[in-house]
Amino acid sequence: MTGKPSDWISLIEAGYNLEGNNSQWLKGLISHVSKILNRGSEPVGWTFHCTPITFKLGSFSEGTSKALTYAARMSHALSTEKSLDLTYRTGVVIATASELVFPRLPDMHKMFLNLLKGRMEDLLVINCQSGMGSGVSIGMLLKQTSQVTVQERRRWPQVAAHIGAAVRLRGKIAQLSAIDSLEVEAILDSGGRLHHAHESAKDQDIRENLRTIVRRIEQSRTQAGRENADAALNNWEGLVNGRWSIVDRFDSDGRRFIVAIKNDPAHPDLRGLTLRERQVAEYVGLGYASKQIAYTLGLSETAITNCTARVQSKLGLHSRAELVGFFAPNGFRCKLAETVLNGERLLIATNPLVNSCQLIGLSDTEREIATCLIAGSTNADIAQRRGSSEYTIANQVQSIFRKLSVRSRGELVAKLQTKES
Image 1 (cartoon, one colour):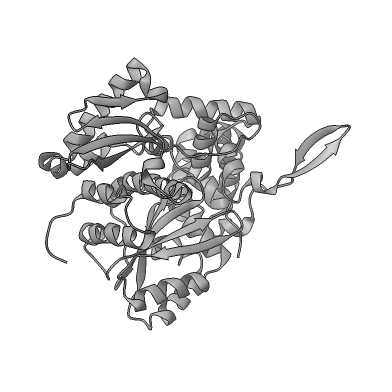
Image 2 (spheres, rainbow, N blue to C red):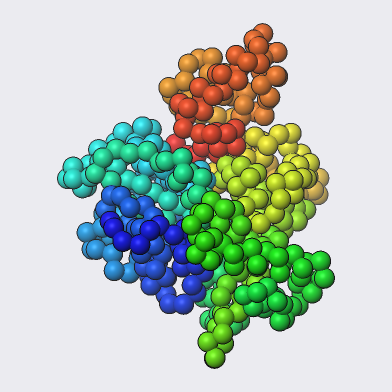
């Protein structure tokens, strides 16, 4: 596909366009995605809602060919629970089916080839999670088996944070029936001058920080800013101060203003966790690294690390691996049952550490080490237990990561909490 160069900031701007229904909104996103991906078939977008035990497709992008829409619907209808787990419940933002699904589920590969009569060999999928069970996926059929590039792995999680935030905004519009009913807490002009503020935006330090961030975002939206995509994306985080999405609004005279809308993910309380702690824990459960969570919520990595430590302490968990296992979409939390003992309400459950079938492809030594990792053991602990050097264990851990296509212990635990087909 030829034409205007890729523009990652334009894609984010299209995400924050709150006009139209979901199909029309997706059409706007896809028009930018096609220029950025610049490979394979025309992309198709769809909304979804995913819980630990249910999955439901929503709207498809307007204008997508009937053949592509049919292929997308049929592939989901024929998908096993394990396939849906791998695609939607492991926190993976971008991957090809040949990287993520087909090696583990050969029957899905056969189904895919039969469905498309061998005309396409692979599928690229990008998932943009809202952090509240809903989200947007973008799919593109590929004529040849392919892998995601390093640049795509770096940039798409940042863009996905914004599209996930836009999904939350659109959900609020659907509930409130009007954009003007959203929780606008600050109004600024493009120069960063504050025209209105209430709630937490009234604090002097927060107001100054908000002005600084808006100026930085506006710099990213200039022509010069767009040409340095990585710097522009780094300047425009998923939320501002862990609270606001930045959206354009125009008055009757056509003047552009920038509004800060309260848009952090909302979650009910769980055993004394604060809202922020629950937000962070949900992303940890998806296997997100602290850096990715920090970008998504617009907070510092230190704040995320401290928040994670507080959650572990409140829930009596001894490691981040245990925290991932607890909050994974199909993790320990979903297996809890309530009972009463001596007048006390208790939550009880049993949960296997890991199903050995999920470790196919690993050597016996690697399986033992993987089990230790899931239990939260450090390399030093494992080395002492096995009478090996930390260097040897580190190499074996990296081998496990490669074989299971994960990049961290968090991703490992999240992936191994998926259901078996």
